[in-house]
Image 1 (cartoon, rainbow, N blue to C red):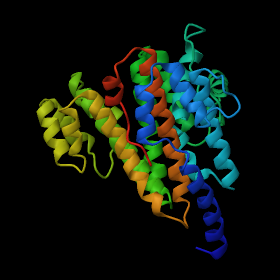
Image 2 (image 1 turned 30 degrees about the vertical axis):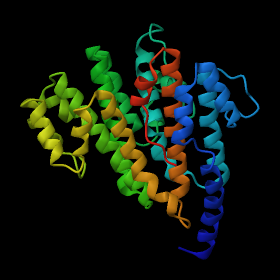
Image 3 (image 1 turned 180 degrees about the vertical axis):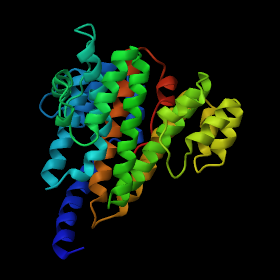
Length: 326
C-alpha cells in the first residue's frame, strides 16, 4: 500500500473514530427500553443528536434521516464507495421484488420501495414493464426476467420471492469472495451463512422439501444446502446435529432458548465479524465497519420504538435486542 493511500485511510479513520463515539452503546439502549413511551425514546435520541435540527420527525422519518446521514458521511470520506455496494444489495433486491409484483398487479399491489438504490424501485418497474432487461445492471436483468416470468405464469408470489432472495444472497457472497477488503469478506460470508441457517430452520419447521433448499440456499464454505436438506428431512434434531458440525454450532443453543434469541444470535454474528476493525488504523476496514454498525444500530432503534409502540414489555423488547458495536 502506498504512503498516499495510507495517509488517505488514516484521515478517514480519524474521522470514523470520532463518529464511533456517537454510536449508541448498550447502556443507552437499556435506558431507551426503560423509557415510558415512544415520545420519551424520541427525546432521548434527539438529545444524542439524532435528527439534527429536524427534532420533530416521526419515528420512521427519523430512521430514514439517520440512514441518509450515514450515506452522506461515507460519500464525504471516500472517493470510491464501490466497496460498500455489498451493503446495498438487500435493499436493491427488495426493490426488485416489489417492482416485479408492482408491474403485474395493475395497481392492486402497494409497493414498499426503499430509498437509495440505483436504479430505484420505480425505475426497475418501468424497465420490467418495457421488457428491456438489459437496461438493468449486472445479473439484475436476468433475475428480473426470471422472477417476472415465474410470477406471470405461476402467480406464486412465494416462489418469486425465493428466486430473488437467493439471487441477492448469491450476489452478496460473490461480492464478498471477490473483495480485497478482509472486513467485506468476513461480513459477506457471515451474512450469507446466517441467512442460509435462517432459511434451513424455517424450512425445516414448515416441512419444506429438498427442492426448496436447492432453490433458496446458497452454497458457502460453511453451509452445504444438500446436507442441510437431508438433515431437515429427518426432523429438527437432525438439522440441529448438522448445524453443530459447522462453525455455527451456537445457533442451536440460541434456537433451544427461543426464536427471538436465535434472531439476535444471527445479527450478533454480523457485528462480531466487523468488531476487529475497532483496532485498525491504516485500511478502509474501520470505515466499512462503521457503516455496517450504523445500519445495525438503526435496526435496533427501530426494534425498540416498534416494541414501545406495540406495548411490549421491557423484557420482550430486551429479548429482541442486538449486540452493539461499541
